[in-house]
Image (cartoon, rainbow, N blue to C red; front, top):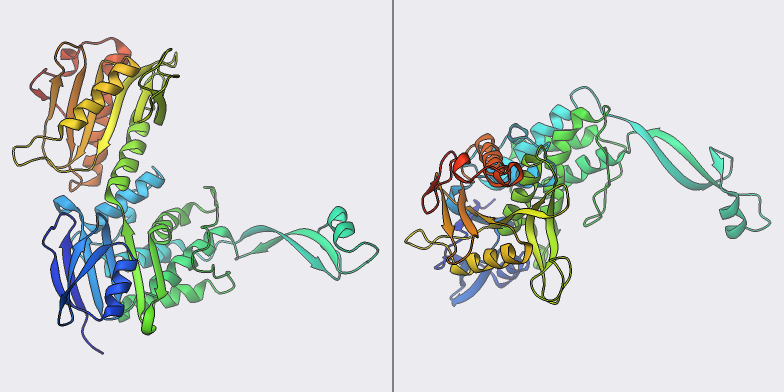
Length: 422
């Protein structure tokens, strides 16, 4: 077996890396949307990021695109998991910060499923509709008449069956099967995945690309929930399928701006839940035309808005996964956008939450207006608990003064300076 060849790129890399690939391998890589492959001649291809992060394996070749600011695998999985379910915790991810994506993800999945099945496979009742020779459960007379008028058998019935073939177990087995399809996965973790798959014997294997079965949190599946969250991340963002010329292709690809936006939206909603009013994502509003912000002629969707109990907007948030300039400045267009939001919604303050390092937020007061735009960095490479603490602090500093009629200075904000405590 040939050794694994690999290339690692930063998502902001504009020069790329050269790799020796066949045309079929290059096509397989491009089809995953992770990288662009430009022919350089003599079998060499220049690989460049395409605005996404993740990892792709094509037989014995791997390319990995890592997020900016050294956001490791565990952090990436935490952001994905929390955005889907605020019950997700960083300790649910066993992968190491600097580990390669595929081995660490396989290890995280194996650890989580192993813990879920430690006290046995959870069974449950599943409602089944079938045509049988004998009566079982309830006869569906309407279906029987429509399908077989005048016939006594088979009989259309509906019954509840106590089985291991539940939605939860289908999700776990589908994720295990997808991970087992990854080429060149280490022997130790592969054997562990195979063992766990065998423990789910009798559970239906979902076809590739099938929708993820719906499940609801309950006391019975409580010990399954960390594993289910990781399994859903694998299934939503991963794929494994044969490529041209018999190639084995496995991919895990995410769009970081969408991951960041979803995480900020959920984290803000959770952090603002204790304040009066409610938080709404993608609030439909209008910039121009007669009437208030609810009607008009220039539609827009605002990332996150906290609304007062009377339904009027209190504060605006917008998540930006982008890079500051060499001088630490962000795009002017972002401030124009926030001014438009504040003017249309008649709110005094908008928060631009950027993905990046930095300890302090900067407040900019727009000339000849009462509008303030707060530039607030969020360090995604920080400890997940610290990230959530910072989101809570942002929530308190942003909506708290507006909803309690406190002044900006009361919460530690100095106009033109820094936001203390964020």
